[in-house]
Image 1 (spheres, helix red, strand yellow):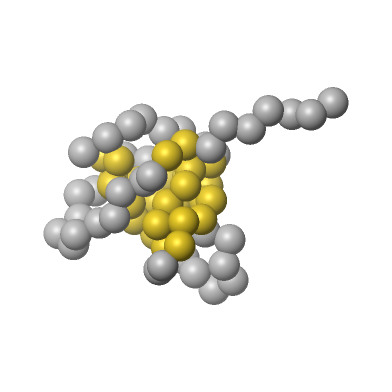
Image 2 (cartoon, rainbow, N blue to C red):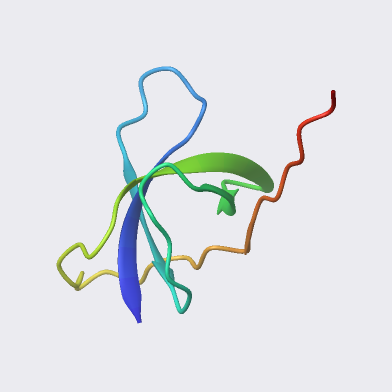
Length: 68
């Protein structure tokens, strides 16, 4: 289990810790649970120290294709 920090698009919220089984890189877009909804966030830091708190898990990675 890996701990990552993600930035959510909400003013005033610092990077949040989430657990994941997958390997992500800084800058990847992921879907995470936040309060009572699922939102898109950006991976800010990987390989963070293990937390003693119970962490929510990353739901999935976002895959976007550019439209030309």
